Length: 233
Ligand code: 9D3
Image 1: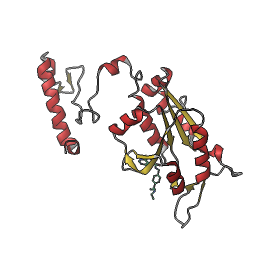
Image 2: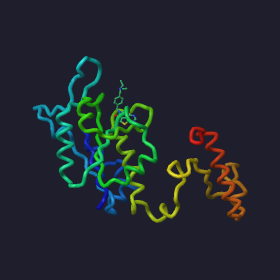
Image 3: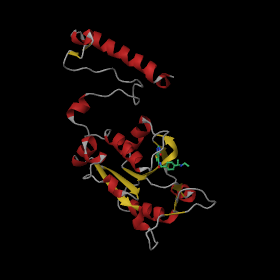
Image 4: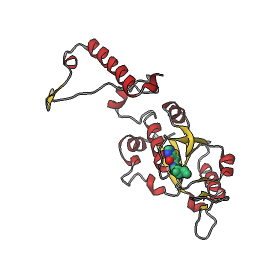
């Protein structure tokens, strides 16, 4: 069975595989074609009972922006969950969430079904968050205009962990990042040996694979210390 990812959004067209979007190219596109990933976007607006298909309203207590109402979102969740008998892990993309890490991505990739909730609004009515009790996830400390791109980031990160999603070349070479090694990558070089007066480091042309591996490992440590000391602690 493929991993089924549902997204609830008021902009379902952002998740189309045909549009020039993240899910129509590269690993997510291949995963969908290989049948290991199924992505279904559902418009929350379709569950509005309002004559203008309204899904949000002004905040009690005043203030800027609009608040997603409980009912359309709750009904959309119940409907979408009923489309497949497998229970879905509910995930709300929100600036208030825990920052997405590779460890969280690995956990999410083990699920059979994910239900992502994304939106263009100031926030959800707190009561529907309490009722749905989703995992609340942010992708970092910067302001997006909505949760949809954050949902796509999550889908992309999860997809490349699905068995069968990577091509032979990519899976043959196991990557070293946070998940396992918590070090940045070493620098890479290809032809030509000299470009605009810049040389490829001699060690990489030496043919001594033990020496090359030692140099790369030293580069990983060096770059991590310089650029991401927080990864070392
Ligand atoms: C008064 C503060 N609001 C505007 C600055 C809060 C706010 C609400 C909704 C800010 C952004 C958004 C839309 N963003 C998301 O839904 C979102 C998000 C993000 O903005 N950054 C990182 N991760 C995420 S996950 C969802």
